Length: 126
Image (cartoon, rainbow, N blue to C red; front, side, top):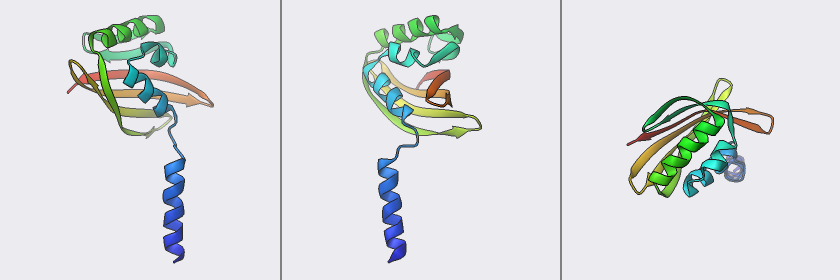
């Protein structure tokens, strides 16, 4: 009986406690095709790999490239697939469905207190 109650309480706490709340920010931004919202979390430079653009860009350049991508690829939906931690960084993987195809998203970011800094953003066509 105690084991059942413990499992139940752990299940409930996992449902209400989101260890990666920043993924909600990314999900909302990808769902709406909001490059400006994503770019808020870029550092001074970001490693960007988007079809047609691959390299390390300044925050302003990366935002413009992402904005152009969303203009050409109207977002239909976004699904968060996986997230986790690797050493001192975090990652979020998802599936972005656009009018022109499906793209696998990969966001590598660091958290320092309440601050989030995206280090790498990849959009790979599936």
